[in-house]
Amino acid sequence: MQNGQSSDPIPQLTLSVVLFHSPLEQLRALVESVITSLRAAHLSGVKMVCWDNSCDTAYSAKCQQLLADFASQDSLTLNYVIADHNGGYGAGHNHAMSSCEGPFHLILNPDVQLAEEAIRLAMEVLTSAPSAALLAPTGRRDSGEREYFAKAYPSVWVLGLRAFGPTWLKRLSGRALARYEMRDQPNHGEVRPVTLASGCCMWVRREIFDAVGGFDERFFLYFEDYDLSLKMAQLGQVLEHSQIRIVHHGGDAARKGARHIRWFISGAMRFFNRWGWKWFG
Image (cartoon, rainbow, N blue to C red):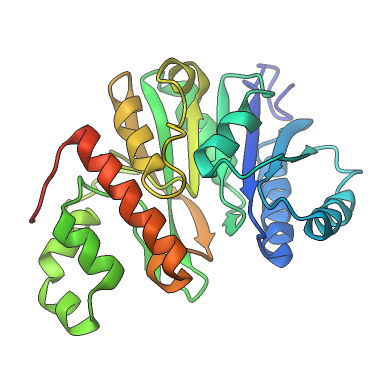
């Protein structure tokens, strides 16, 4: 695999996305953005595994029909896999990545769109900084509002406030929220170290990802990305790049219903039991 502007070989990149009844228009937008970003990075023949946890024949047929529209792309090869059961988000990515080879991998949500220069910038950082274990983007919601993907270590109070607190209480607790979202820390360069990264979009160095055992599959949904961030930080750096940008259409577990609230609470308990409880701040 060669860079169109250089004779030097570009390290192989692979990608995965885990689906669960994900809106097809968002999946199409994701794939289109990936293709655009790969072309800007002069990468071709890159493998992307779409792991479907939906366990729904009708949805599967629609997904395959959509992905067939991209079969002729030279920059991206799409592999669609139907899971025999829904083992959760982290398990889906672990399974998808087991069929991928290469030093770098991009973990994605289906509700994300990459900026054109995202992959090029990420590959530049990962290839020039051997200590980089995990790389996170910055981004916005589809409304244009800034979304803070990088986080400091959370407290029970701030997690509950963000997920379930009324607007007036969030305003009163603005400093605590700013600290959690790392808005209180100056960023004097394009790349800065962060504590936690969001699983909606993260580049990982496979050597380190595999060394820490990948995602802990005991997290069904929520906090598996925080757990992975702390594990990978033990062997390398977790970084955020201010110029690697995405648009994120998802988030907000509390608005997704009781099932997501249960997953959120159980994930938080497992996370704190492993890494230490912090009640306030």
